[in-house]
Image 1 (cartoon, rainbow, N blue to C red):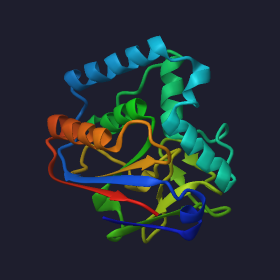
Image 2: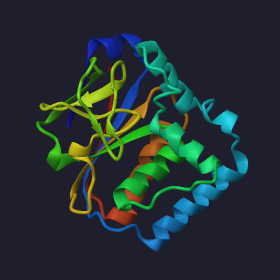
Image 3: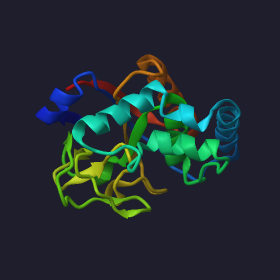
Image 4: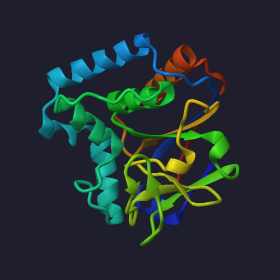
Length: 221
């Protein structure tokens, strides 16, 4: 998958790195083994994190700063990594969805990065572009209906928006039938080292989703 960047992204967040991971996968209901791993991570975070410290994590803070620089209020439209961590610290736990989605949530919580996970077969075209949401641009967020993506970073394919750091789009979401995966790890500011987050992503996908033909690229504006 080729990833391009609109000039406004290049100008406002020139240090951005996007790690893309593509693979053939077998999605499934989340196994007890994977869920136990997620629950341990949730427990560890709940024991050491304070609510006020979440938005100070380097990966989350940098994403929030990108929102502000583009004109979006991050307290009203929180990056997904921040929302996950806040939920955990509140003691609410995470939803058990499916293997691929739960792996992405685990990666996001541990790395501090907002991560897009897409069914590659539902993406129109071989290139997506990261730009900025336009006023009144339609975007049906997963599980939350129409999302106001004005001034928010947004990936678009040939049809329209597929993902933002706050939520991905219903049109390209991962389901049990998904067999081709595209992951976009959005690194607005480094927290977990790039090589480490790549290694963890590949490990989890191989172990729990039988990933094969894995292709990893690092994209910069």
